[in-house]
Amino acid sequence: MKIFKLLIPVLTLALHGCATQLPSFAHVHVGHSLSAWPDTPNEKGLFVLSEDLAVRIVETAIAASELSKQGQNGAAVQAGSKISAMIGTLNDEVSSPDQYTFLTAFERSINHLRYSAASEDATQNMAKGLAEVIERSGEIVTRSNVIKELASLLGTLEDDATIAEAVQQLRVMTIQNLEGGDGKYSLRDMRNSIAEVLAREDPPYVTPEKKYLFGVVRLPSGLWLWDFKKADKKGDYGRYSY
Image 1 (tube, one colour):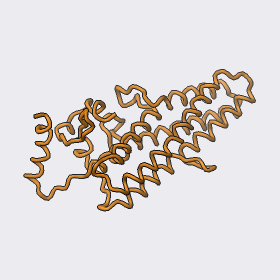
Image 2 (cartoon, rainbow, N blue to C red):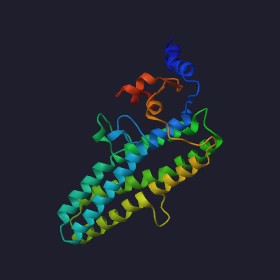
Image 3 (cartoon, rainbow, N blue to C red):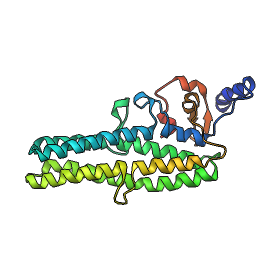
Image 4 (cartoon, rainbow, N blue to C red):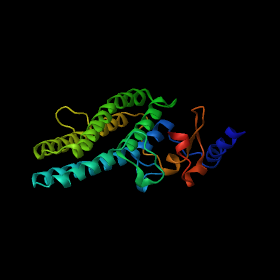
């Protein structure tokens, strides 16, 4: 009975709009990462939020580096604490949009790419291409954790030269995480890789509208279904999607 009720919106859509083409679940999950998600700031896509947070982390690391060059190592250490907090963990609790940390947003964006690659309606291109992206994403997680440890370590250092060296390393590593360089896999590389996968899609990938992005639910069995009434509600998505 429950499944039947969930299917009603789809049947209704089919009866009243024969020309309407539902996007694939595989494309919807990519949309959750790249386009929109209901509990992020301004409903940004989870990967987009990751990029925004990575930019803030880079800006903070650059500011810390400049402060250190001016001999203000105390302020540089405080900036390091901010970096550590912004990176967070893979499983930070999020009860409001402003509580997202980089690693939590990034991990959730990867989760949705996993859902896409594993979806029964995913093309071979999507399944294979995203699997490669997902595999390499671990490099970003590992580097982010190293950055967090280094940022936290600043508070234990007393030698000015050592602090200056550590702060400069933070600057380099945060930029590598965002933009790459020296052979490091970055968020920019990852976005480009996803774009290449989507460019090969047939039929072509078209960004799903929000009514589709917010209108899917995941049953405990792992089955995804449409429930467009949920597109008008917020706060219940986590139990289906993470």
